[in-house]
Length: 252
Image (cartoon, rainbow, N blue to C red; front, side, top):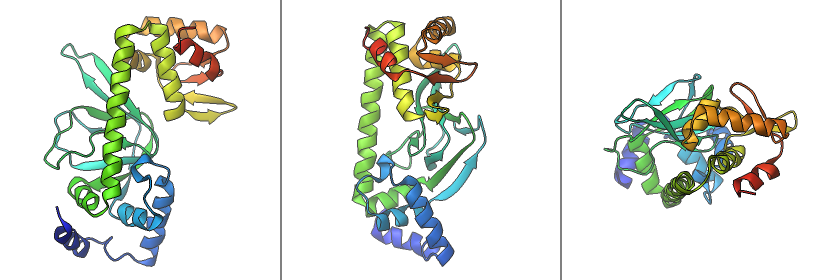
């Protein structure tokens, strides 16, 4: 979709000529996402135009955002909450490929509008997001080259992330894999609660992310709980000592 088509969209859509309230809303949205890697090195004025093309949506806990094989209809940028991206094995077992937190795009990004999702996504808790129609996002990316560059940078980061996790699963013991994952999640989706960082994942979900069993994850978390490294509850792991986790990740 090129500039002429974008102008046609501008004429047809309500965000093309925003009211004062619409401008305030776009400014508020721009402030929400200014730290997102999707908007790196994009000016506030350009950011407002880009987010004006999106709709704000709310999703309930455990809501499915899309299924594997679905056409890519939307580009979803979380502004709050968390979503997991996963696939299922032939025996029905679930593998979590990654988690997306606030400021991150959920699922497929940067593909042609005729693309299809190669995984499914589901929220872990109540979430909000800015959602662009895929064809509109493609059009906006043509108009703002920095947005397209950021999209490609995100794709490269995700590829590196998957390669790193594949290496860990292939070469490292479970304790190092689990501690590595908790270190990543600490930054990505952790939230500060009473002086510690909480990661809202069940032990089963941690097992699905690290290629191991529920029993092994439960045993390791119990050991680390006794050592004061983490505090593990039913669906929450609180990180009490990030340094100790980092040392475990190195195999020390």
